Image 1 (cartoon, rainbow, N blue to C red):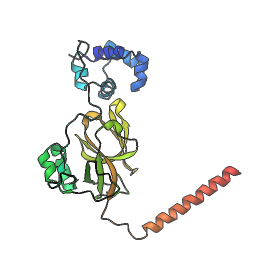
Image 2 (spheres, helix red, strand yellow):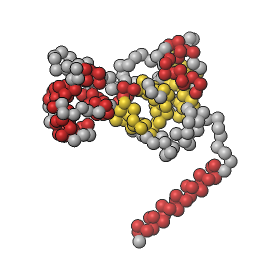
Image 3 (cartoon, helix red, strand yellow):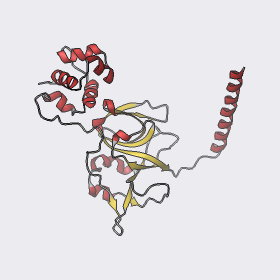
Image 4 (spheres, helix red, strand yellow):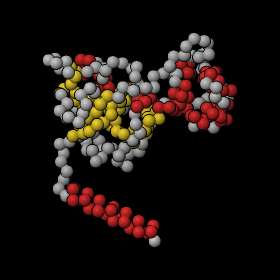
Length: 260
């Protein structure tokens, strides 16, 4: 039995929301909320995800369980904070946590092994040598592929720190995300957890943005730097300098036009 209409009405009233207020919060028309509650229409999957995320209940419970029957309602973990304990590698001499490296050839297996201490322990490990990075964080280095994040080129190594609480993801910062559908992916992120998803954007305009439902997200790692063994080609710095001069001249011309 589908409990969507009953659960929707129950949860909305429990939160003391009108149909109009709920519709505004999840981005649908008020009439659709009425149709869902009366059973005249079935929400699409995307809308179901939004509703479940807003009320912070598991999608499966929202659809298949009567949540009005009393007792506590199982809450969905939209923050990632309660997923699991992160396996780390520790230096055997002084118990200091080591960083681990996930090269491209290992990224395909990372989705299956991210929670396996033996798998993580078999990855290359190292002490973080950079004084700019605090030593009380958990770091992992992911080698990226593809051209969606140019000018960072395929084969570059992105240095990341572990994000325990996904609600702290900041808009337009870069993250390595581990998703159930794509595995390891490096993108800029827009935090839309209030509607149960993240938007992923590429720096290369040839790649369109897309969304990832929160229940498909496994891990989040904030990018703090990168290193690459592909040095800039001859003339790159000169071309960049010329571009900067052109932009400065354009600003001056625009300023002059405004003054006139």
